[in-house]
Image (tube, rainbow, N blue to C red):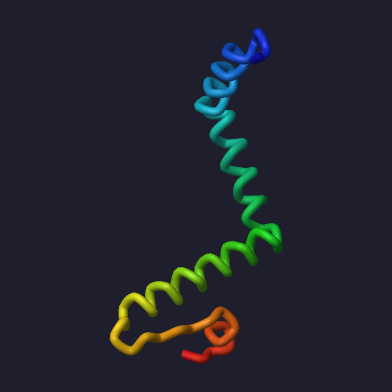
Length: 76
């Protein structure tokens, strides 16, 4: 069972997040969030894995199987 004010709270959150103050707050929060070491590490691993997938996809005839450690060491 939902709280009796759930709908109005949801509308209020949406109105606030679309306001100039809400947009600025979100923008500043995300800037600080992306500076966290664990977030940087996760983003870098995602980037590397996408590069590996792109490399494997672009050369399917040679059946390249590159792992994360080899890629980071400059094994390409």
